[in-house]
View 1 (cartoon, rainbow, N blue to C red):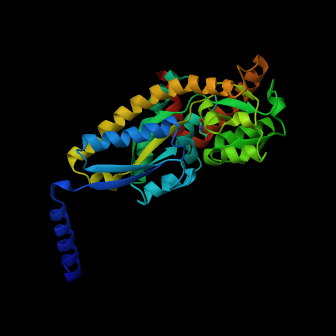
View 2 (spheres, rainbow, N blue to C red):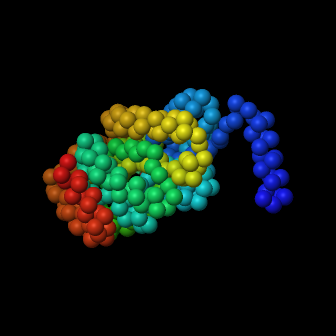
View 3 (cartoon, rainbow, N blue to C red):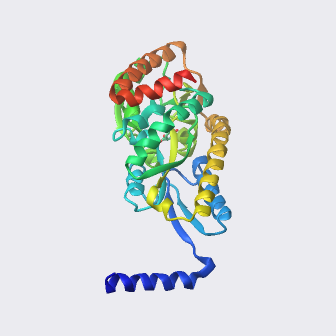
Amino acid sequence: MSLKTWLSAAVLGTALVGLGAQAQTKWDLPGAYPASNFHSKNLMQFAEDVKKLSGGKLDITVHPGASLFKAPEIKRAVQTGQVQLGEVLMVNVENEIPVFGADGVPFLATSFDDAAKLWKAQKPVIDKKLAEQGMMELYAVPWPPQGIYSKTEVNKIEDLKGSKWRAYSPATSRIAELVGAQPVTIQAAELAQALATGVVTTFMTSGSTGRDSKVWESLKYFYDTQAWLPKNLVLLNTDAFKKLDAATQKALTDAAAAAEKRGWEASKVETEEAKAALVKGGMKVQPPSPELKAGLQKVGATMIDEWVKKTGADGQAIVDAYKKM
Ligand code: PCA
């Protein structure tokens, strides 16, 4: 051991002894959605549970609202160890790892029950991909089903032609191309501003993000197409996990299991509450016309084909496992 290593080990040892039973690990958890959103509230409850279950040994600070990292930067921050864990929108990772996009394919899984099955089918493949990058997953929670927002009435997909379409993922950009709209990628944290300045007039997302962004200030229509349920995933840097003692590791994974369960229930409640908020804001909330639905389903069929081609054996394994459930 060099003198320098010996010295730093000695200093560290003293610091640990000094802390004694109080030794505490502090972690940061960036998220991309507002503090008032149900995902963020769930993150905060998760952090509180971890603290309690670990007897105060692991203290996680949640940073919602893209305040620490912007949505597309969070995965890399966890991977490189800038933060120990973080919440990502899985479909945001699709460009890098295509199988992350399974829950963004329109009309593959359209209900909470089907989304749960798809997650089960997706999980082993996702775990493998994350392990290759020195990460693991803690829990995943879906957004409410995705519908169409528009400034003007949409009775068929042709009505979306030429509109300024906000995308949040590769798949939502692809939908724009297929319906002849002009996609512009904007994450949720910037959506309200994009609406206020007229940069976008149409998009697909949940009632929840519509509510967060007070879309009724700019838009009039919401079509409840229930096209897919994208998930947020809480990722963890494996090295950070390995540094915890066994009891603290268990506190973390137990709290994560509880958060996953709680999150799925909260998403169901949010589905109804958010739609009510849109109505209260003055929007017309309605099911899609049969013509609009048929047009979208055609888009969905094209996209499932494209997705399976792009993801190859890994994607096919997910689709096959899902269809067998
Ligand atoms: N809200 C997020 C992703 C999906 C959703 O419902 C967003 O619009 O960015």
